[in-house]
Image 1 (cartoon, rainbow, N blue to C red):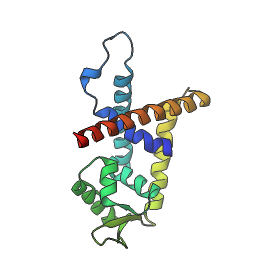
Image 2: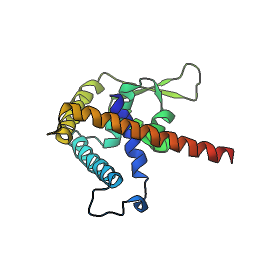
Image 3: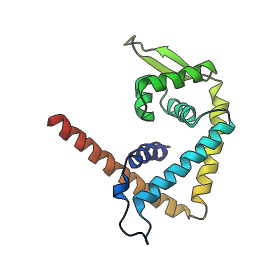
Image 4: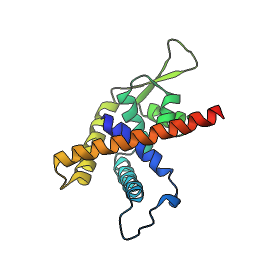
Length: 176
């Protein structure tokens, strides 16, 4: 689960990489382009799978984050989804309307809504978990388990370096 959460951030970072970073050797696969393209195809597949359940990918991902971090604030969810707070609020409005999520007052700050799953969300998450497992089977078909472990480890390292670099650049701008 932690690797999946980390990959979400990693894919988000890769999406912001410009075409200038596409490799200069067209006869060899370019890792950045390949990762970006794989993420795009996975998003398209997730869109299709979520739609089959009457949901959007954003709603699906929102439910997964709230399941992983019960009591998450709307602002925190917006940051995780890389959307504006109003967009996250609208997503939560729809999920709340369908009885999947509830907003609760923060006991320490009345300006903050804390998000929690309702019982009705559990079968939905189970169905979506089945879809996630099918997606994982598709991308890992033919890859030996020890190689998958290495891939997860390597991608986690790459993500950590990208995140550290982005944080460093952000801090440089804050200082400047």
